[in-house]
Amino acid sequence: MANILLARQDKAMRGYLAQQLRRYGHRVTVTDCHDGILAAVNDNGAHYAMLITDLGLDGRDGFALVKDLRHAMPDLRMVFMSGFSGIGLVYGPGRAFNARIITEPFHLRELPEQINIILSAEVVAA
Image 1 (cartoon, rainbow, N blue to C red):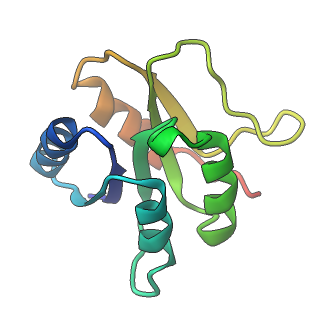
Image 2 (cartoon, rainbow, N blue to C red):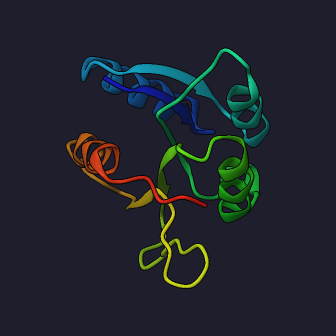
Image 3 (cartoon, rainbow, N blue to C red):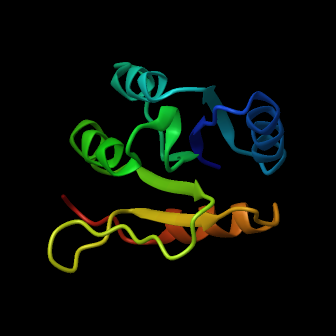
C-alpha cells in the first residue's frame, strides 16, 4: 500500500481519516499545517506516494502549495478536499496536476477509490 501524508486542521477529522487510511493498509503520517507538509516532504528520508489535504489549509492557497510540492516531489500524487464544487486543477495549457479534488461532504468509501485511481494513473511531468 501507499505511504500517505495527511494534512487536516480539524484534529478529530484528521485522526478519523488517518485511522481509516491505516485500516485500508496505508502508512500514514499526519500534520495539521502547510509548513508541516513542506517539512515532511523535504525530509531526506521521506518518500510519500500521496498527499491528502484541505485545498485551503491554514488559509493559504492550495494551488501555491501544489506548485511548491511539484518542485520538491514531482511524482507526488495529491487528493484535495474542498467544500467548493467545480474547482479544477490545471497546470499550464491543458496539463493536469497529479491530483484529484473530493468535494465535502463525501462518503468515506470515495477516498480509497480516489486513492486507487490516482495511484494507478500515469504521472504528469511538470
